[in-house]
Length: 324
Image (cartoon, rainbow, N blue to C red; front, side, top):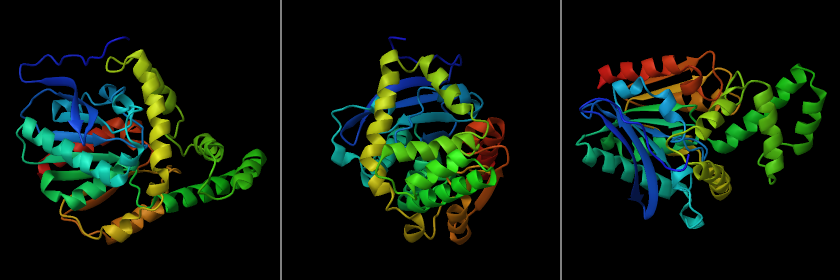
């Protein structure tokens, strides 16, 4: 509760480290775990921005640790890497892209790998796609989970779908509240919370069964990797990161930036996801040129198919090892 550590993996050739390194002039934290140092690296880029994973992800990656060196990175301004001293002007997409490449090159050098596997979830999928586009030489395969293409279009479509669902369910309270806040972008965080409330209520939010948020919270509170103070840092990081970056994120549209990549791409999308409606992602995927590309729908999931259908997600990632 008052000190950080990650449990050892009982294996002569294993790695289990929780470490801080200097990335882009800022102290940032990595959780590095795997049963065999000779296995390839799998770097996880979390969503948000600010939705750091070190505090709970170990619980979900035990099978992956048998096949990979799994790396969770609490990004600049998030989780263990949050600090009120971080200059707000460094909280921008270009800096995060540079950070992601710096983390990648550090891992390659530390574990003597030529390339690595990459997973990006939600906001992390924007960063992941930008990374493989700019520096394909670092990556073996990219997994985009709940892939965002245009944040602005995603928010607008999400609002329309939630309002449509409220009408279908004849939920007058939802119709009233959603109509009052109007279409995004919203200037008030209260409006965002109202939208999020109904996303979750209608089963299209973090998880379709609406249980995952509480599950994450419980795991963070019991985490070996986070202290009690770190749980507060995690919350502060989420607020700080979103406030600092949301305006810029709304201007990004990957469809205008990326037409072709040199890395195999697997997009994994939850059937019930109302946070990231599929239409923009599907249009981007259809036009994207890649050595191999695949679109996989998870039929029991909303926004977090990598957790909601963990066994299926793990199997897909492990099977792609054969492609390399």
